[in-house]
Length: 380
Image (cartoon, rainbow, N blue to C red; front, top):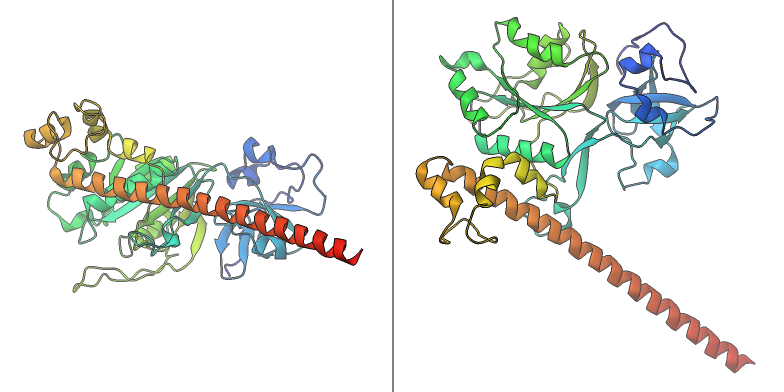
């Protein structure tokens, strides 16, 4: 466990945290204040989850860090009410009794479910809660992949969050701005930042965005440079780093836990283990935001259900022939569209299955009641 850090010398604010600079430093706002009971118990402590371990949570209450456990009833919940990094929680003694409603959250489809005919494809894995932005980190080595960046953007938009893209290892190329332009061509209106190893001025724009009380979540592949970036933003070596394999171009997991880190700028960063599989949820609306160019031209197709393959009057194919849209981008769009549709269908089928099981349970109960009535009649 980390050494205790004091954000403020003020006493822990238990029932009236609004206006307390220490709590606001942690991201507390009127939104969370409204979630409290009218008269919370004086023994209740309000804290934010800044670390997640196997059976424990590390929380900060505005004054110090505390190691706590989930209460028995809360630990059994699998409906998203189990605490994740960035959550605000109510603690009694050393137990988390309640997770306050989230302002937002970052999630993905459960790992291992993409493209497989099983239930894990539609399960949701929460990554972080109550964030102001999501920083997609991509290294300009073998990690660089426009199609993967498109998936990350769709994932972030699927959660209703604001993305930023950070391109690390820019020193590896004579003209890294070419990569920046490529990313900008698929990430319309999304800030793209080039990070040079020996130039700290490139960090200025990031530090200015991570202002007092704001929280950003970092996501990216292993070896993309997240830990190195965090160390530079912190101003000291906090996260361990490891070399990327020259043979396969893949990084090793140097981050194995999720932690919320406090920056000198006053903001906070949520570091996450490297993501091997960017599994999506079931919202197709996120594609419209991640692929606004295709969505715009699709609206002009002759047929409203155009598949953008061989139909006459397809404006998407027309712009591919003109070079306005790359064929690889349409292929990525179609692939994610099929995946999102599959996940939506799976969830719908699951709902139908639940309804069918409920009807079956009711029928069994009715049958048991009738048998009981017959037995009672025979006894009388």
